[in-house]
Length: 426
Image (cartoon, rainbow, N blue to C red; front, side):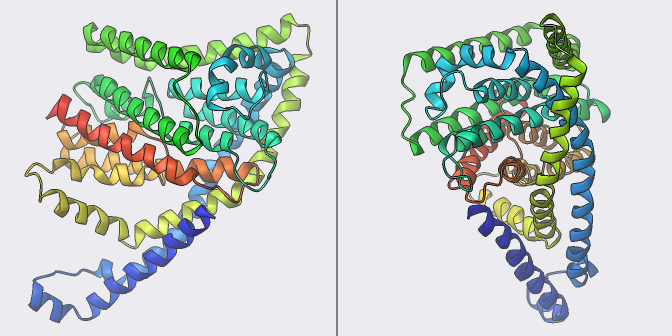
């Protein structure tokens, strides 16, 4: 129901904003004389832009799905090998004492635990392409336990919120983009992004736990969260003393090295168990196309709605209004030039990345505005994309409070990212 209202809202708000822009343009002589407002042909062509956005975003959905189909096919094939080799079960047993506190509905040793842990690990390394098929597989496992197949369960909501909070240890894509635009120090956003995304994840976890009445003050959970905080603190300390060249090399190499090591380990484990590894891979790979077919309508619907909302100018009105609002409290509102990245991020990863690149081009890659945009891009995930794809893959229609909780985590990430920008770069 939530996605239903959000999706309709994209179109209705876009229509109202476009009507206002068109009427204002048609009576521009009065408005110009009275208030000094200036209108352009963009206001006259707003409906043309919105209609074009429906076509462009439909094409964008397919450009996303085609490579995703290949990634899904490959990783679901590997997961089938890992599952038959007993790896998923072992991981489930190892992590269940911790994850069972956050997912009390999931039985101990259930495959969902292992797949969720592998998904979290891929996200932690900044390997979004690998994380998606792992997450979809985990969502299917959770759906098997769901008594109401069209309504999101508590476990599915917790899993989605932890995904949308975007906990990332190595923001490879952001660092790579900064390198492409010849930043003097591409990896200097590494530490502030890590801190910002930690805030997003912890806030999302606490908010969902409160909503689901989960007690976080349990021994295993406290030890895990405390241990994770210590590990991250040690990494931050080590990075603080390392040279920038070393940081760049570690960021660029470590995630992909670990990922390929996982691939080889799964293949080796299957061979060691004397499995027909290739046939098992093909068996699992066939599931990839079935998942993609289920995703197509959900993804197209969401991306088109976002594209229309953006083309109408509604997003620009929001950002301009926020800039005027924050000027009431502070003279330094430079962060508002990067704020469109944070606003777009929950709706579209590609759109947010495009806005980040536009900020880099406009202000310079090493400007405060561009660095803030980089932090906003790396601090959270594409909430509505994740909701549409993950819930769509298992036919969930009633998402309950998943969107609200995901947006709470996003808001925490945005506030933390802006705060880190002023602490590190102002």
